[in-house]
Length: 145
Image (cartoon, rainbow, N blue to C red; front, side):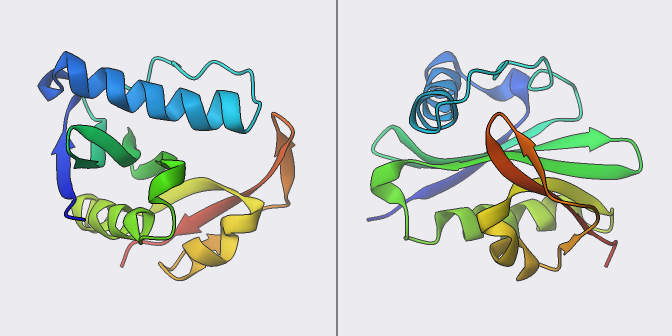
């Protein structure tokens, strides 16, 4: 399966792509993980936000967003479609995100079971585990390289 990696600001997203991204995020975070939360939090449209995704045959396979929090970048909404899991797409997105971010420190809030995955990219735990929307999370940071 050949997947195409894409990167865009909100204004560069066409409506079909945006719909696919939001559908994947909602299908996984709200429906599969049973989290009723404000998925559309207003940050997707910020000028400093970058959207990265893998697409195959017009379907969004995996996605993440990079937020600009001033001196720090924030990776979030990392998601892979159920049928595409195990193919390394999330790792490909994280690697690309870190390339896009460059020499800025980066933070994320990892679902606890994924802490070791993020540690492979240089992220370290910065605080205690906490529960958000019924799911254990760990705050993590990657210092500037």
